[in-house]
Amino acid sequence: MTAAPSPGLTRDDSERLQEQDRWFGRLASVRTDVERELLSVALRGLDELRRDRQGPGSATQLAILDQEVHEALDQALRRLEVDIEAGNAPAAALRVGRLTQDLHPQVDVSLREFVFERRWPRMHAVAIPATLERSGGAPLAPRRRVTARVGDASVDAEIVQGSAPDGRVTVRVESEAGVSFPELSQAEVAPVAPTPAELAAQLRAALAAGRADLSSAWLAACVAGGAAVPSDLRAGLDAWFRHE
Image (cartoon, rainbow, N blue to C red; front, side, top):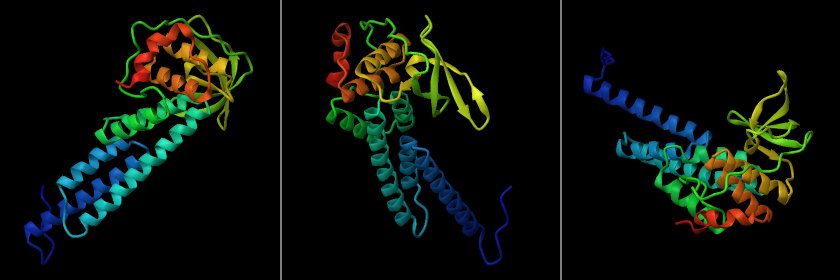
């Protein structure tokens, strides 16, 4: 049921004010997407707001929001670089997943340019080449300190049991709720201060798990960390480096 107009307002005036309220509510929703690093989603919301611009002050609000979104994109790419240089490929893959959800052309271009400048592989919209060797990597040693990807969060953990035949590891995680022992894919854990050999092993683990997102992130970590890409993988990985 449509609300009755307020005293002194016509029904058209009332409906116009309600539409403006909805528009500013959508504006707030886009800002929430920015805070969550869902920047493709935010840019698509911004595009819709531009098409439906409402009333005095909306142009100013749109200009402010546009600046906020692009500053957030720059910051997210810098955080991505920190993740990769630290060898935390699971966190990097999670960040790329947030950035590219409902991929917007501006994010696509910015991310492609960013990784190309660093000679990293493409980190989104890729599939593992069928020609790649899929044997698993060397297991991580028990008691090795790692950062583990548990759900949508990265947590400090310790390896309890190295990689099983199915490529999974058990880690020990301490939190306010107590101690837990989640079982994860080896590719979802990042050794703290990894050696080049560990980076290469994690790349193999990601490929064996069939995870394109983690494979490209671990490959980028190998490049950034100076780890030699295993010779039997070079030909198959070349397509990622060419950025075609």
